[in-house]
Length: 117
Image (cartoon, rainbow, N blue to C red; front, side, top):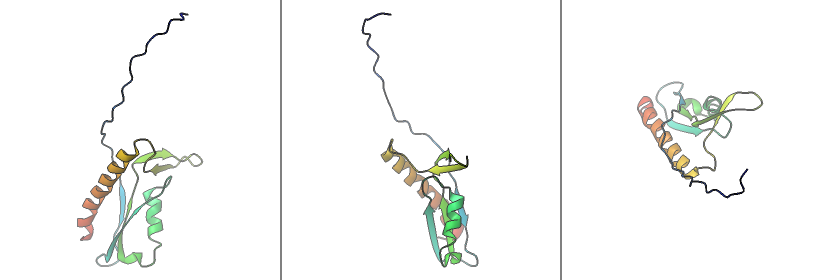
């Protein structure tokens, strides 16, 4: 083993845009045209399917078009091993916010023609 100090090469870090896929759940109004479009984004460690069920509990929601947008970052919930999601962490937070805003806009662009908005 040598006591000589060896220089390590510099480490470079670069941000690269990557494509990912997300999903949403749409529940059209019970009857007729939607009075309103209600869009929900679930909390950390949840999913859009569960969130849609929560949105349906809102008084008068039967007349709304409901959209539950699912976060892009999937992980396993420790206790149940169920796949849940989160929107972002502190790491690259500003980029994640930009990505999430673009993603939600894309969801709305798909949903609006479906519900007449």
